[in-house]
Image (tube, rainbow, N blue to C red; front, side, top):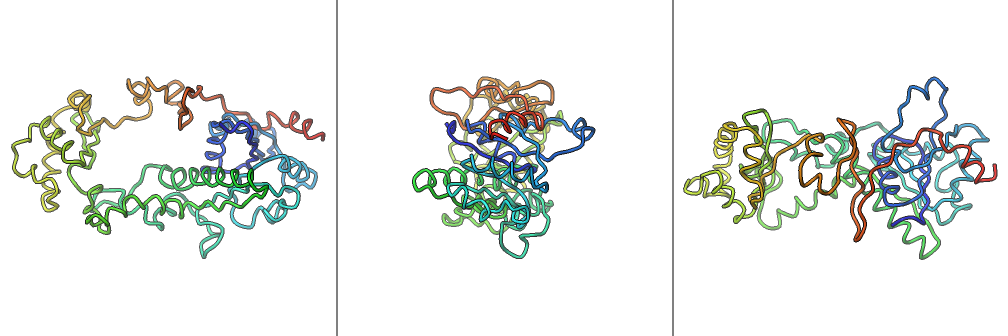
Amino acid sequence: MLQSIKIIEIEGIGPGPFAAMMLADLGAEVITIHRKTAPEARAAQSANPLDRGKRSITLDLKDPEDLKVAKALIATADGLIEGMRPGVMERLGLGPDDLRAETPRLVYGRMTGWGQTGPRAKIAGHDMNYIGLSGALWYSSLPGQPPMPPATLVGDIGGGALYLVIGMLAGLMKARETGQGTVVDAAIVDGSAHMMNLLMSMAAVGNTVTERGQSRLDGPHWSRSYRCADGGYVSVQALETKFYALFLDRMGLSEDADFLRQNDKALWPELAARLEALFAEHPRDHWAKLFDGLDACVAPILPPVESAADPHIASRGIWHGKGEVLQAASAPRFDGETPPAPSAPTERGADTQAILRELGL
């Protein structure tokens, strides 16, 4: 889909490399500028799965000669991705203003936690800090428990990498039409707050979303995870009335007067406790089999290794690899195309000499 697009990625961590990997998955030529390291340090560094589908050149951006190589390489590209703190790329002479004269079409993607401006812009932070401040962490646990999100998915990936990809694609479309690039300020604190709009929209239909445990998505007994007899877990989210009725029927609760009061918030804690006791009577696979093929919105919670063996996941070829060394296939999918198996990660510097020759250096 992006086979005519060329992206230069400045080595970083987390969401920046993920965004570049996703663009590579979609067919863009992505070249990563990795830092030069001593031979013994290189030997200790394993290839990064996020470097799959990319080419790699090693440069020291503080070295004037290597900086010239970097600028020459960027001049051949449609886009650039970097994840430094604000001001670092400018001090290297690689800020947007430094590059625009040579490459006006360049789409300059900036991936940070706090954004390029604001009181926190230049201080350190990580995934949970960004989504904590943005409001996205607030609903991520049961009432009375400290909020705890799934690692990296809400902030680094959801609010960060995916918004950077969207911004890069929008910028590339504009550049194709006008010849003028743009700077994409992709901040996790912005993206993760933007992701909250679906939940916040529920206030418009009469559902309170400001108090934890009181909205229809973070408090009811029919929107939770439950522990099973073998220590496994199942997810239940029977939101709509017709799905909730199927859930109650399969659980043997269709005649229970309290459970029939689905939206009575005063009953939610008590009914959740009753479901906890019921699910604890049998192992996870019992419940998975009981609800298999039924529109009751119940599914087992699987670790990635077990997920790969699930019939639905396996039929779509989502996970690839063996043991715990797994990679997921590219997404989304396109008509008539099956995502190829993920390629092996590129070794640092593997393409340095080839890229230099292409640049005539």
